[in-house]
Image (cartoon, rainbow, N blue to C red):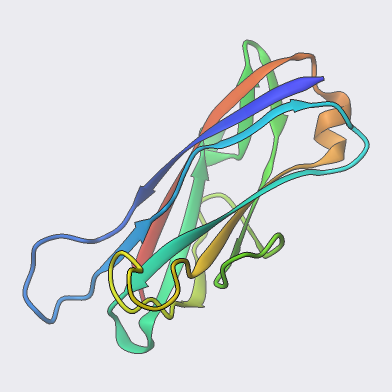
Length: 157
């Protein structure tokens, strides 16, 4: 049995700039907490809906994820023990599956239908972040409290 938590940091290019500068903003992103995982024979999945706003042409953006493991790998740690996890992204809200992200490699071609930076008009969320603890990782993990950091970089395309 293992408990797992993941701290998530998001970065975008929302800076005071000229009226025509391309900008992006991510809101509603929260830490992922799996709690105690008792069934080690199936993937443990946590999904959250987030608001991604981009003002570029066609409201297109890319997302790049980096973990706290060596070379940006998606790894949770508990003392000397470690456990690999997967990160997936879907450019629709409320999804429990999406395109798998590889550490440090942008996933382009994503679009948003956010009407403003905080998703206060139109849909309250526009994308899904999905974190998966694969059964293969869970079955080989030592008992412990695992944690790590996932950084998301969202950029206008």
